[in-house]
Image 1 (cartoon, one colour):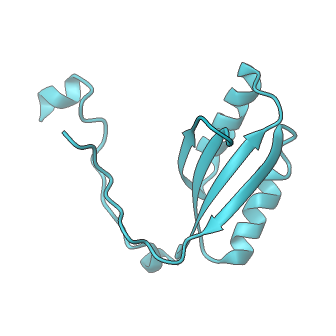
Image 2: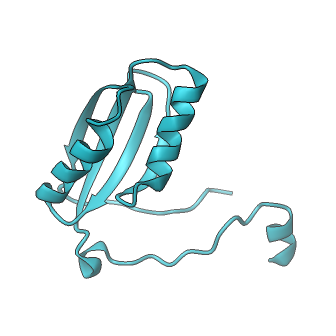
Length: 113
């Protein structure tokens, strides 16, 4: 295992926690479209999402959206605070769409080898 860590194959060891046990039972998938795709503005958005405690996953993607976020919060009111403080306040966010998860059907944080 240490060799795999040294080679960068294993990058972290994690524990899976039941979100309901931490009162973070609302999961929201958010697609974000930026207004401008200048490197400095994209980097600014990445930094902001890394710093946002509500964002558990952030992917830069191809297609209609520029980013896909997975947001974990207590309830709809907490999600409203997130979008008001992290998305509406970012002048480079053109638009976003959110999808509230009704049921986590599958969640496997692994890579197939």
